[in-house]
Length: 88
Length: 88
Image (cartoon, rainbow over all chains, first blue to last red; front, side):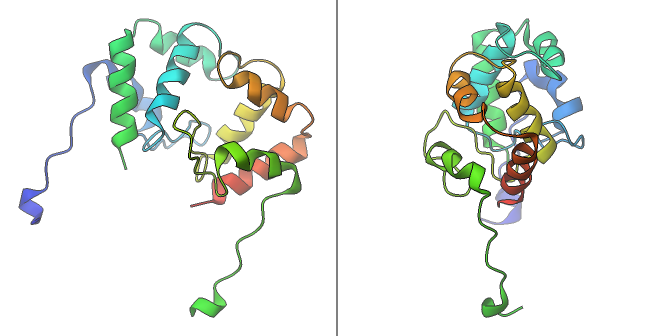
């Protein structure tokens, strides 16, 4: 496949624009205490988002994440988990 | 560097032998809902281990992790976070 044929990367779902400032444009963060989520297991990511949303993860950055995910729908969660899982 | 000169991989710290059955020999799990921790940020990994240890992460697999980490010392946590962070 020639470079010109390389498919344009799929943009992050709209609900995920808030994730990029901490997690990095492609899920590779500049901050050392923020997890790399690029290429992470989508099921794990979706579970983690739900655990932040329902308060099962507390402490440290968890409070930031709880705020970030509180308005995400289950569809948003699945889409974001899939998108970050697909990043290299 | 010739293949013969490639340094042997550092073995996982003794306290981490219990991690491999779920997280995989090199931090790349076979199970889809277990996170890939190979190459993850060491500071994040250490924080996550401490959050499991002090009960700040609950729900789902967290209960398994709480059991796994309850006897880890802070030195163990730092060593394991460093080792998994170094895996490719």
